[in-house]
Image 1 (cartoon, one colour):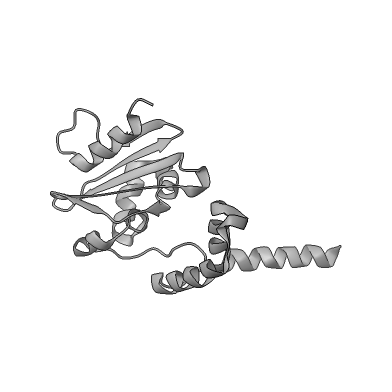
Image 2 (tube, one colour):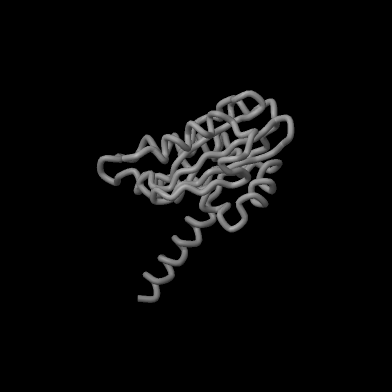
Length: 177
C-alpha cells in the first residue's frame, strides 16, 4: 500500500514539474507526443491532458510590436511585456480569459489594432475570448464569453476606438440562436 502511494506521489511530482524551457522545445515535445496519441481513443480533452503531462504548458514569450503578426492570442496575453496590462484590465478574470485562449489563431491586423481570439477545448468551446492591442497607444481590450454570457473589458457599446474585428467577433457570439 505504501509503495503504491509513493509511486503515485512521485508520478504527480514528476508530471507537475515537466516544463519546456523554450517555445521551440515545447513545440518539438508536443509534436513528438502528439504523433503517439490517438484522439479517437482518448478524445480532445485526453489529448490536451497528455500533452500537458509530458510537455508542460506553453512557455511565456517576449513579443515585440513588430512580431504581433505572427503571434497567437494565447502567447500574447501572457507575454512578458503585455501580461501586466492584461492582468490590470482583467483582474480576477485574467486566468479564465487566458484559459479561454488556449486554442487560438494568429493575431489579425485592424488599423492600429491587433485582434485575436480563441477558446478553451476543455470546456467544449463554451469558454471563448478575444483580445485586442493598440500599437499606437498600447491600450488593451478583452472580451470573455462563458456559457453564452458576454463580458467586455476596457470598453462598452459607447466606446469610439474599438477595432471592427472585435465588434465582428462579438456579434458572432451574441447573434440570436
